[in-house]
Length: 325
Ligand SMILES: [Zn+2]
View 1 (cartoon, rainbow, N blue to C red):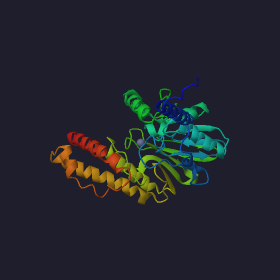
View 2: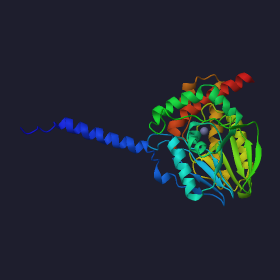
View 3: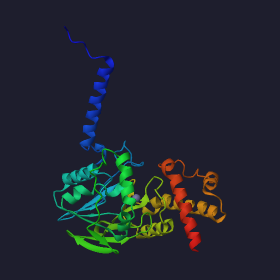
View 4: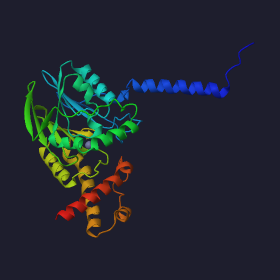
């Protein structure tokens, strides 16, 4: 007797299962958005990769931030490590296409998930991780673990149960300088500003500054409960340096720091002004948010995703500031 063909639903089910397996294995191979990891050269020695403009998502596989690297005579110095372990691998592979020199050091501008989940690749390659000591608090407070749980859900399979959070090998207590392969590097501490442990790295010979998330180029910054007062001061410090090239944590690099810092500065000032007024007049947040005219910023990328959280964080920050007065 001839075998009967499987029913249509059974065949459909098999096809769907096969497609899912294929997709999952592709994803597990760690295919970062291939076109995106093309290093952009900004000076004789410095490069960076440019992440997607939006928030971290399944669509961009967590590639929504930048990372930089400097190829010296003897070694490679990396700035930030991107937001997933596969992206860390992809960044190292991109560096390897340009240089076979050892990656000596990774300097983290701050401990936010989108800038350091890719560290494992660099640790495995023998690099030493440096960050500012205020970052210890991130691990001590439970914030790191809570964020990891969220990323395992939102960025699976690029962040999964095997993703390890890597702490610095050297915690810096203040700014410092070092020389490496004929180049002079300077680290300045800017935090607490966007994060408690913000720092920036200057490559003196090239006039290049890697400033992390002090500048969000061309998008609404993520402010949350940041210290926006200190952040504004950090922006002024940065503008005063007049770097030839400013490489930011998000968005394209800038060759006109003063102009490009304007959007971030204006937005922070407006948040503080509007939420400050509400706190002063004891208007509840919901009401204050609804009555604020956001039209000046509502067309800027990431407004929908970030503005309300930023406004709420700023409201709380200004409440704290007013109580402290
Ligand atoms: Zn950040």
